[in-house]
Length: 103
Image (cartoon, rainbow, N blue to C red; front, side, top):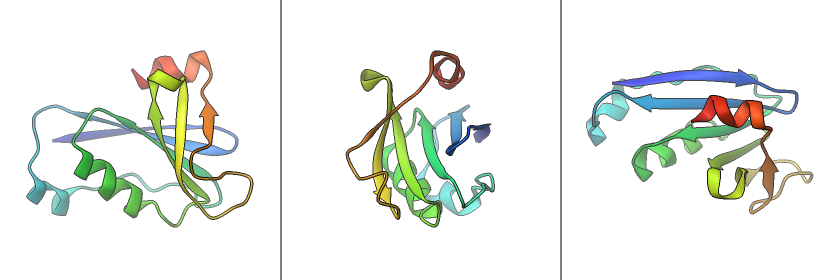
């Protein structure tokens, strides 16, 4: 259904997901996203429906910040933050090595 992988970085953890087949909304009840270090932020990456992204943003709301990867910006857009150093709309640049892992 949904395959998750993580990349640990200094200030954040990247949670990348891959869908091996289309999913349905009722599949959310069966998801088991990876546990992360809540003292860091999180970047969500992957191709999927907007409602899956909404679910994951809410699931990880307890982290320092949540951002979503957007290759058009070469980084991740902060969508939620509990710390002043990252504000919604900020773009976190992703290094070339990290971005290759996200494709």
